Amino acid sequence: MSKISSIGNSVRPYIQKINTWCEKPYKALANVKIGKYKPMQIVNNNYIKDNTKFITGLGVASIVLKDGVGCYMYVTQSLNNKEIPDDKRKFVAALDLANGGLMILTQLGMFFTISNKKVQEKMFNKLFGKYFDRAASKGYQAKLKNNDLLKDMKGTDFHRVLNKARKDVKGAFENVTSLVAASIVAKRMLVPFIATPLADKTGEWMNRHEKPDKVNKDTKNTYNTHKAAIDDKINESETTKSTAPTAKKNSNLLDKFKKS
Image (cartoon, rainbow, N blue to C red):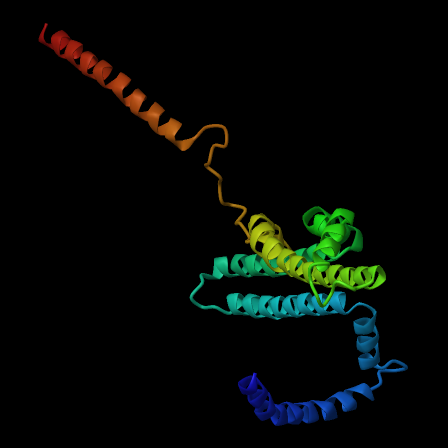
């Protein structure tokens, strides 16, 4: 214990300095106004109202912002990448744009779905509800009687502590499930299956202002849409085989006629 206290005493001055450094910019931001509103006041109110949801939303917002910036950089890089053929650049850029747009939309959708109070309540009760129900509460109270420090705890105090523990566990569960749903399920599982098919549509949208290549009106189309090219070759070879013996036969008869 003495070692721990000595470490704490040595670290405390540095923590106080960090708090002092952070205090000045925080106060400066707190006084900033945008119209009639103070952004930091809105942040503080949302944090006080539901700190778990605020922290989770802040985490998802940072992920979405990062993906948005990355999407812009990838699309710009693909359009200007000279190593990619000219006729393929817009498709690659369309794939990057579809991938980035879907990541943002699916992450937001999963966050607002999973973080919903009704959804969270059902998920939490299904996984952890048995640890906070009436039977579990009685079991905890029975175990407390064997503890010398807590055996005299009143029922109201016990339920208050248990409810707080349930709230804290539920908050951590909401935070983890929302981040997992947004960053893993949406980003790594759903998006790859949708991005590639959507890239064709995105490519068409990106090329909507480009005019198609002009074809000379004197150019004749010799391609037969009703018959494959291989069929022409087969018919040509069969015709050659069928006519070759006949020509040979006629030439032999003509020779015989001349001799006679």
